[in-house]
Length: 359
Image 1 (cartoon, rainbow, N blue to C red):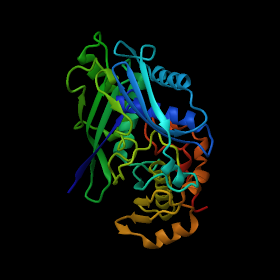
Image 2: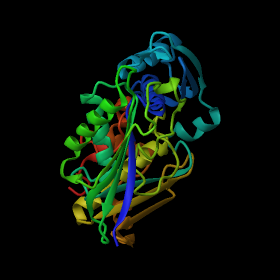
Image 3: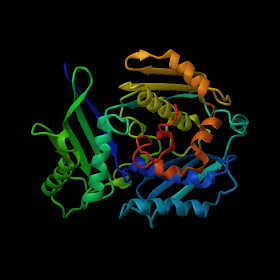
Image 4: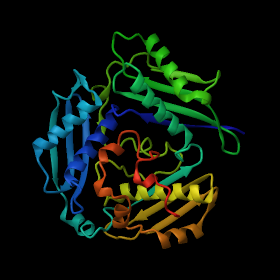
């Protein structure tokens, strides 16, 4: 019997994504490519207001510079509306120094917290990502790039699978895009439907349903319409729900935080296993304890079976400590902001997407 699976994506102008991007931009500034620096930045965005909170260990802290970083991010995303304008924002900076107790564990590159994180890969797309999340991202790319609409947008794609788990078609597409009062809902729906059909190609057919701006109006967008917070788009950031999620967000965190670096390594392992061993899919779980360098567990599940022999192989050949992960991917040189826009996986320029583990 066939079944349907659904994933969503959001634009960089979605309120939660704005918060993620600001958190990562500020964290990148505080870390400043210095392995001794730390950051854990949380952001709230609402009507003409941005609130920063969290902890840092850095000699780069400058409130005026951080405020300018916030305004620059909002400007780059494209917000110049009455209720959220880069020039008119009130920016509240409540960042403070890192806890000395946490520093005891992370100064020596122990894990920045306990937790579990997952990586996933499959052969549904060339980038080893699930089809639904890949297509939903593609829709957002095209709607933002080729349509005269505002920066706030969301998409959702439902994919039909055969009994043996092979994708065959897109059954439904949902897309909401911010527009102006001058743009009628009829023209918005017609234009976006054309964009979707063009970018999804043969995955859509005469039976595919399109739900475009289902409420009928989407003029008030961004944080003026809906408050945004860092870390509320963790499924968009990963695999669209195709595998478990450990619960920890990525954005705003330096890479001693294994919520981030451990998830990058889990993806690297899963993708390389699928590529090298020709599996259709693979799920990897890592877990850590705060202040401890080595992981507390490693789990590998591929093509319906636990692969304990592969666990032994990976533990023997890969340095899974936070420092080892950071060094393999040069994570202190990473511009964290660039990972926050459309998800952290599936883009060839990211170092954990390389296929060189078994070289």
